[in-house]
Image 1 (cartoon, rainbow, N blue to C red):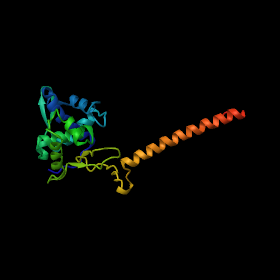
Image 2 (cartoon, rainbow, N blue to C red; image 1 turned 135 degrees about the vertical axis):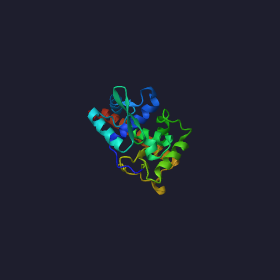
Image 3 (spheres, one colour; image 1 turned 90 degrees about the horizontal axis):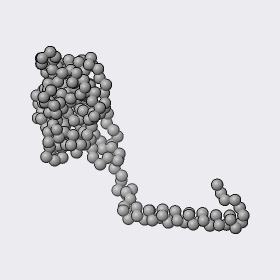
Image 4 (cartoon, one colour; image 1 turned 60 degrees about the vertical axis):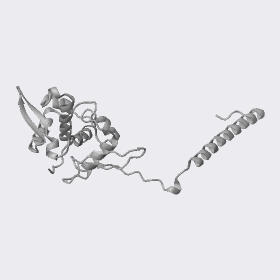
Length: 220
């Protein structure tokens, strides 16, 4: 199924429903109050939101229209459950990865493996990468995208596409081979800096000695 772009709050609602289904199954499906609390949770959320009941209710209405959320009667209040895997036609492993990204923002494969452990335990990072690859080339349309590696980062991060194409950070340009500094060159540079530092210190001592002999005041 091809979905229209979802808002940040709508993806947060979906993420909370999946998360709580596995972490607090005794209270699932969730009431509106529990869902609002989960959306506004301070831990394991990026960005942190302050959504009202009315805003979460409106998000639920749209998600119900897309069959991503189901409503049921539980006692005196309505309760809500998610239908992500069935609507998108993806397995639990993929739902777990999407959930972590929806709740925490773009993540590396290693971060996804750690943060999805309560939803699904992946054997290793290659398993995570395998399911990410499937989500990226999904026949009905990609659900994730690998972002360009950021400056200073060793790994690339993955973002979901349920809200459309994310703003992509500038890719890190590789350093040309002829401009790279070898280990030997780096050691030579460090030795040169150390030698120059010692020479400057020696010159300062000489200047201070001459000033004292000539009766000149020391430099501030």
